[in-house]
Length: 360
Ligand code: KG4
Ligand code: ZN
Image (cartoon, rainbow, N blue to C red; front, side, top):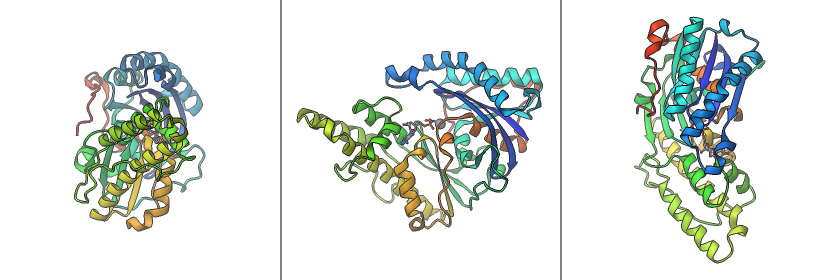
């Protein structure tokens, strides 16, 4: 089964064609993404109106490129999957309108995909040409840690995505951030150091030259019985330290140490709350997904310490190309949902719309 996916929820205009091989193995035949990062850089964050306008310009070129590179004719795909929530409404509407038009014109079913469900299935994506049998093999219960610029959510999955109920995300949410997302904490603190958006990548790189124990930043909701995350306290503590160093004329020389220390505070908070859920829910596998799953310190810590968490197998991560927003994960999620019969066709397509909120 071949699915074309479209993702326009934020600042990546992405189209992909994937082939569903088996339960945990979805082959990416092509992926074309126009990243708007440079366009938003002067503003220090994503500007919704700039994003929607650029999606309009980039959509058709990305669609053409993804279809051409896949080697699959557009009218041979089995379905079209599109992110319909959550995200910037104007940006989402560009993708949803494209998917509806394609579905209607080609007579193909359209699957409306929740962006976070896309991230959740991203570890099951394999590169084109990967010999069959090389996908990951999760054991259940599986804890899915979705850690991105907009969300820090832990979900408990008892089955493969093929058997997820329609309201899986709502029913399986076991912990979340009460305030900022982990990616947001990276982005906001990076901005204070003068790094461009998105800051997580810069902090990760610069931290490699720093000492993680140089400064001590708070770990939010530290108590064991607190299962939710909190990252908002970090901003104030970090800003005070930055101001103090700046006054003393010692900011520049301390940037690597500041990066390493703030990264450690974020990673530590993520790690301890993940550890609590793994133990409470007796999880056998853990999947770390979303933009922050690209973080090298987080991966190193989990890779070194997964046994102590009580997991039966090493953590699952998406390949780096599939950590941040991309249409391959949306196409993959669309494939699972199509197999369950969740597709919209014909006149019903007219009622398909985009929603800004996550719905849980
Ligand atoms: O999943 P994503 O592309 O977009 C959302 O759905 O939010 O995640 C983007 C987030 C940004 O906050 C970015 O700073 C963070 O992922 N990020 C990282 C790294 N790469 C991206 N954070 C820490 N370390 C990284 N290497
Ligand atoms: Zn995302």
